[in-house]
Image 1: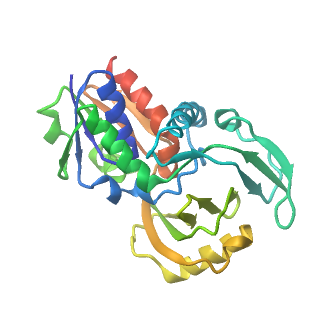
Image 2: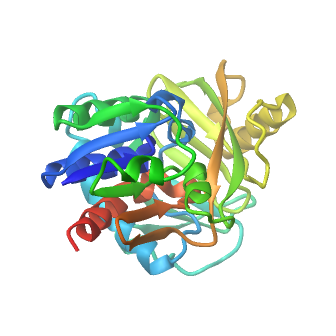
Length: 302
């Protein structure tokens, strides 16, 4: 089957990979190279943050955790398993996705935090991973065309099936105005030798070490589409992250990046005729990628 995947971020490339594995003749149509997508701005910690529908998010996360755990053994993938803690400032039950990430343990915490959830999920160096994934898809025969399209009918004429996995553009291509950008800024600093990650679940601070660098974040500004880094936001991120992990205080700043998360009240994953829509993953695109790609592949055969 001739299948065109619109979108070259982590969702589009994961779908292309799975569809090629299933025997499809796949072409990816994308305006951006993998390294220029929002996916590479993500910190890469695998857990579903505020995903709706929750049941789907938990299911897709479990499938992705299984795949990323296997990829942690693959040289060059940029994936490893790393212990860390999610700190919380108010007592809450275990999240519904605890079973999906596996081995979660509750600990007491001090300071402004009342408890902590410790687990060892996959942690993905997204810059390395997107390049690896694009290469892996190409080795399966996936072709890539770099161009922007204004409507899905532009690619439907040359394909038996189209997968709309274009992130923010995915909403526009589907005529869906419920998809809005959520601006996220992160700071890359030199890694002082951290061996664990840390997240403050309540003020959205996170410190994610990748060996050569640490991703510090973050922000989530709904409806804001400005991609220019804000120096005041950089200062605020570094302040919050140093409170979370004091070892990073004074570390060299290597880079500041901004990405626009494609947020939607809930992820859209369905088939309408010859089009499968898979967009609206917000800040959980990496986390949901393999589970959603599996479901897209199942829909493709229906």
